[in-house]
Image (cartoon, rainbow, N blue to C red; front, top):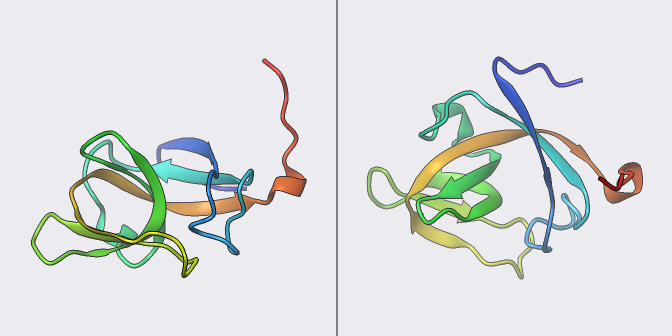
Length: 107
């Protein structure tokens, strides 16, 4: 499975901006090494990230036009790209489970 140096998190995919790679209803597994900041290993990779307004995104993270800003890119050509966003943190996706491999359990 996924070995993380710190906490492991799970996130359900909503929307289609990362289709066909990540489908709505699938589950992403990621590790948060730090609680704040964007580590260098996140640049150029598909990450789960949070912007400074508290919104979570699954996007490819690239450097923005200024230090401390990032471009968040969709895989789906019809998806929205976000430019020059300040991020609280970003964590590369470590594993993906498609919707047909996920069983929801009522809590």
